Image (cartoon, rainbow, N blue to C red; front, top):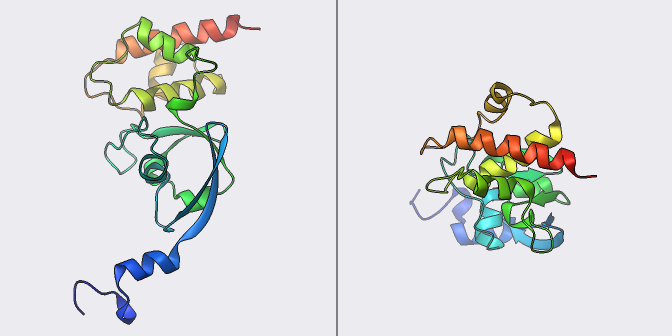
Length: 176
């Protein structure tokens, strides 16, 4: 079999066209309709099809957390999530956290505490932190570190990230 064909003599482009699936994702409050290959990850759908590049592609193996988004209120690594399996799901990316031009308390706290250096992991860290706070399981610095352990910062901004999450938790508890 030649490298340019698949079983049955199909060419890669014909497989993509015939296998393309319609999917509707509610991304940052808007329904977005896509026709994508069934093997398209949520990460690639967001970045390549919807031009939402805040979500980063790090390891592409679910190990670094750079691609973390909020899916139906839970944090997920989007590189391991097939978009077609999330038809109708509500997805929030880092671009969708601000409301009416006001940063989300976690976003503001990351700025206040300089909780980033290169910034590559920051969108995933922020989305994960938003869910961590909503889960209500973390109260101490050790608990925050444990529950954020799926999000790696190669620059080592962990003390600032923990401080930012503490600030955001306090700010969100103070809101009515």
